[in-house]
Image 1 (cartoon, rainbow, N blue to C red):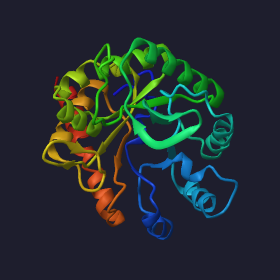
Image 2: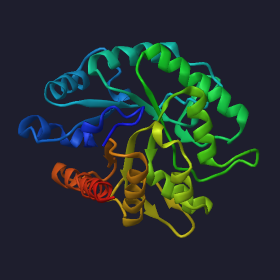
Image 3: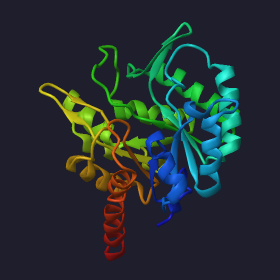
Image 4: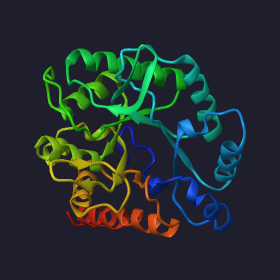
Length: 284
């Protein structure tokens, strides 16, 4: 299956997040894993155990960087010290692309350390896209922005979330990290059809897909990443794969983390859907 413009890595297959409880198992057992995703901020240091572990991982595996604090949607200017550290790490890992979230999280140099949803306005899209372009130019690698799960909406919004995402990535000329679990969570919290979302984003810009578990409460759904992927999310994943083609996929499991085998086994379920879509396309 040919790669789309932003997905030149159809051979990446299915990866999992590199997490501390699994370090010893990975380094001693050397399991067969297509790739690991690292949280960039955990390794943006000058030395010590994090980089010692990372260098050992890099000897054996491909690594893709995922950030949690770029805050493309914040009005604050980009943090040059952060970008310099990030560029050093990018050169170390040789990550094929860098992802971070389509959100805001800082005001006047104060950081919330949270992924806050944005007002879906044309003005916000212009500011966000300009910052994505600046980061992409500085780091000299492709950027993919991730849709976040949300629990509140802004009255000022002028469009849907998927229209906003589409406008940002077109203006920034960047890729998308399509998180189908986040789409499902937000669709239930804000009562929209998640398939409308998937059908109406620029499929040729999807560079990576995330799947994860979530938790249901009486009045809302929370993106918790603390148990296996639920069936409706797998169905969304299958639909997304039909639309965007064979795309690097990652399972997120960040709380109540079980054994490496359990996490890896859950991630590899994605291959069943990937193979099924390949067979559908051949039959067609």
